[in-house]
Image (cartoon, helix red, strand yellow):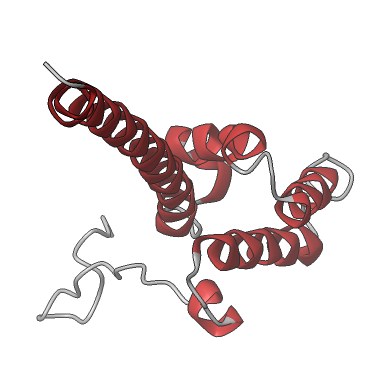
Length: 141
């Protein structure tokens, strides 16, 4: 077996397999990080009308430091939001506005260009009305 045969039949396939494995690992790592960011953003968007009453909402908020660890702006917006969640300032609208700013920063990091109106608008279904008297069917009057 000549040197050329060794290179062609052994070294090149081994190098190709090694490079392929490394590229697959890098891609999978980036893909998973993006999926984690999308999950956090989607969870916060889905529960933005309920706020801290949802367990998933709290989990997503607490994961931001890890998931967005390399984004200074997102982490600053998160700290600002946390500052407005103390009891003495919780009821003010500043907390909600800080939350929307946090969502905006995260959406930009992922590549979604959501406008503030898209972030602030959400759907909450109204209870169906009783057709006879026009009252909510859920009322017990």
